[in-house]
Length: 507
Image (cartoon, rainbow, N blue to C red):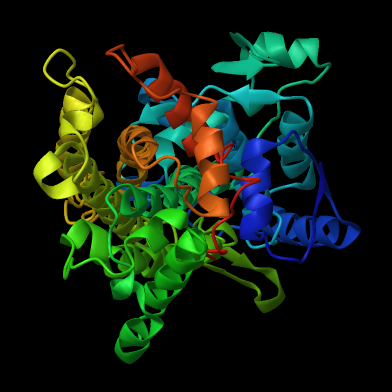
């Protein structure tokens, strides 16, 4: 997939493709001119005698220290080397790839003063599949994602490590293999690289796209449970949702109605005396709709941030000004990451309640624990326990990160966002959610087995068939651990239900 960086914004669809596909990246002629214009302005300013933060001064609390002209390049190199102190597991290559693209796009807008050679080298990293090793921990999400972006920048100057075509090498060796020489950073370039929200934004975008996939699965699993328990369709009457007016709720109700349309199981109990189902069944539009509204808002904020210029100071060459501000503060990312965490936790919570309903014969009308020979067999007893454990863990993860702050840099940076780990914890939460939904899907599919020869709707029959490629019905106890693992991986990657059913566009 060839991507040209130009004046067009990066769409959510493109950002998703960057994560999932092999790409090559280039710069348009107009963008090259923008970069060159800004870079020349910064070089000219660096040759003057005025103190300009980020160009000829120290950084953070050392901003009042003037740097000699002969040391300006060393200043930028020292900044990169000193700040590369991240720790923990390395970020996946796909996220590193997106980080680089976001950094290229930000620098390419011509407000950072980076040279064309530097931006083109970042493009070469993408094209050569040369991904710097970036530790996942060490950023507080203000003054930019400093430590992780420093590890990215290290590779440009021949320091640190990279994943080069799937092999971990020292950056110096990887550059030599690629016939590239280390970059010598010019005035402001180290700071332009290290300032910015690209790491927290890329991690949050990856989580957002995973949640999109899982949201689709949650709607389907909820509809299957509705069918398995012979739930009432009355609560999904569009008039109920129209009078409330919440868009997400209206949309979810419509999708649930589409999913169960034409079901023989539904017709078989059209005149039953059931008045009200438990909330986890009849309040799906309200709960999932509220989550959908949040997801849509989160998408809008992350889309803006992905296209933002977030380093400091900013170069306005046409106005003959270099202005210090605080665009590096990642509060927008932190807040929506927290909001996404709550949505993920809620999607999992209501799914687990439906799994609990399915195994309770007093409420479901199905055999105890969804197995014919219960007692001799435990059936799906412990599957619900596993789901409960995962839901509880996600509740802990859902504690807001953005409400925390800890001063750094000798109190110069006295309020920070914590956006990076706010986003990073979403990876664990989505993994847990994928397991929770897998358990419900297998439980609901097992429940529908007891209604044969009646069939569910054509859409849900197709969804059932896809589930059955991962796990067959159980007659006697067996471990479903491997089957849950395989199904969960397909859910989180969006590799299931693509043909049978695709949820409405949540953007």
